[in-house]
Image (cartoon, rainbow, N blue to C red; front, side, top):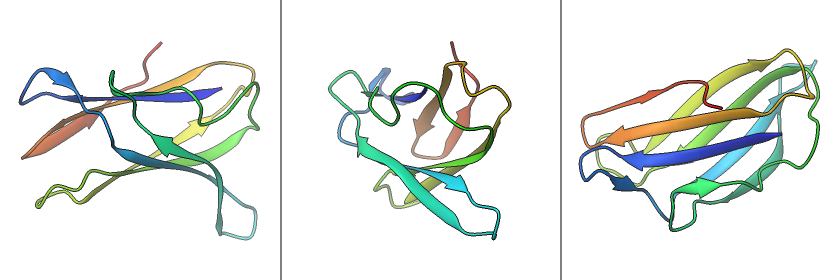
Length: 102
């Protein structure tokens, strides 16, 4: 399972209403969209995938809508598709960071 959470670090609050797309890298070098949604009032998106995912490289794209960072793209590898991969985004007007959450 893959989930995400967006926090606005400038306000200290969740970032609601952020559109997110999840894609998987395909063997031919293209990307295939496998999930999408919008963060809820708590800044969370729990419905990108359900259950296990395949081993491989994934890409999360956040449409942040800000003037400086209109999109944030995070690439990550899934080694064990049975694990839960939580990929949070900490966002401010002038920077962002991410980590593997739990």
